[in-house]
Image 1 (cartoon, chains in turn blue, red):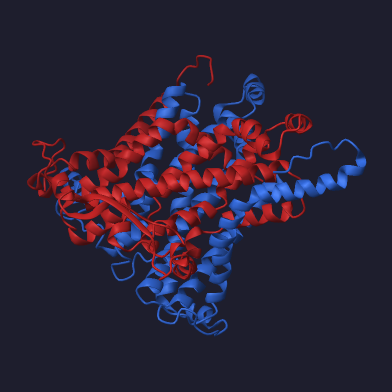
Image 2: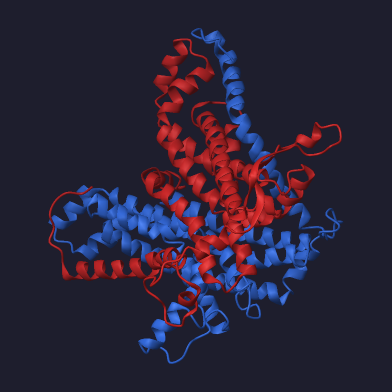
Length: 304
Length: 310
């Protein structure tokens, strides 16, 4: 490629800078090609399509301004799915964060093998894959031959079999539980590593001064793992926002839209109703919510 | 990691017991239920009293799974090939005997994950090095663009992507899943984190020795970021394997179905035959779990290094 390498004189520095630029872009080229064609371009198209009335038959559609957005906020199913999404986020994000911090705080100073074993176990549902996990949970929740009903009725927790996924009272909770199992793996890995990096001399100094374990945790460890907590909050929120496979495979948004989420409704609008423009408008709103949350995280992390 | 013997308080013992119970019941049991369910008889599966350990082991579920012979062993669409053939037909390599559909799903999934893994690692290693160590105009802008794109939900771009794929004549081929995964900027970000650890003097020394750019990359840079590449490889492999939403939208024809798609299709067709579904789920998840267990050290590293912290 470029082999001119004798650049000791200052006069060559401009040539050197140009050479750096050229080689830099050559190294970037393959990645940039995929990035621009398969990520950036569709992103731009997503925003553009959201301003059209494109359908499956008429892929281009014609510009209709912000009509899709106006319609969205009068669409009861969309509002319902937005509420469901918010419920999922509000319930699962704090639970996932608190649970993973609690587990990590207990396991991070165990022996290496024990700590690894726990991390692996809590990560397993992620690796197993959303489809396989969903299939088995569907069986566990089954009205007649599911394990959950068998255990529940036999231990007297509830009297007769419950139709977990068919009952609007329980369906969303069941989905949140599965989502929980597939969400804590990554936070635990991150927390274990963050807790391991806490400045040990500060901890010891505090202990010498007679601080209790709880004080050590809140006064010393908690501030130091704050950036990790913020990051975990954001990735868990993004994950919960995107909850899709569980809904599609377990309930298809039913019963009566009780478990519709924004992500599922996007899919439903695009591939059952064939309203591409409308679905893209929802996508843009979802992206804006997530972008806003990420921005807040970056700001908070910077101000530390 | 930590040494020193500490006294364990009752609180800590109770915590540990609770964690072990949750881990066993909520995290391990579903997996156990998949693997044992795959070998249970229809009577055991459909009974209201669960069989905690299969009373009678049967291969029947796997036999049913492998019963439908429907696709040749190997079939590959050459991307963009119809642009170069005289009658604009797609070039498709196919060979081998006709095989059970489930085996085809497995082969498709493995090919998809391996191809995405190799392409991602290659392009991301090159780009990450350039972003970390080269000083050129537009670098800061590009990097901000990459971080911004990472924060957006991938699913949002899939509808426009689907249209783009049909314009590029890649629709319904395995490449329509692979290429967007390669383009996703997380890999570049991760590689940049690792490449930043390379000391500038080492690169300077190579330049003074007269090593070309490519030679510097292959002999100095690549060996130094190898742990990062390992992390990215295993990360991409597992995520591609399990990226159900992308596969669902992009792949429709029977010859391009993947394991996750195959099972979800079976759920539609044989919704109540949980023995068969567990056999499918086992076939989809056990190989990837084995890969994960073998390489989990790298994986952990990838997760930790990939975290964006202010």
